[in-house]
Length: 167
Image (cartoon, rainbow, N blue to C red):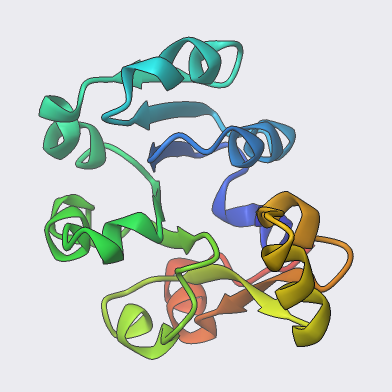
């Protein structure tokens, strides 16, 4: 849920590394100036480009991130070891948001690397979550029943970027 601080996205050039379609739908509602999507999975390209942004090949990651005002990375970048490199491509005066269920396990190291926001989830009913997962249910069945989305904000970084207005 990117709604915690719309100033990170509204009227800004946003680069999303990892095409999460529900995230793109929410991002569109926040009225960015431009959205560029970088993803290795060709099968997501058609869906991602369906009114959500421009798809860019991974080979253009460095140049694309170098011109963004807000970079959005999924938690997969932590898991696959690419987070440090991706962050190095982002301009010093750009905002960084790291999102997804795997993003918030330890937000402080991400904040030290200038992440302005970490969007993650919290399990609100462990027993129910285990039941849903045991029945073969995925993430979408967990939301609204035993898990909710939260945004962890790096207020200091947001203040330095002039983006600390929560609407």
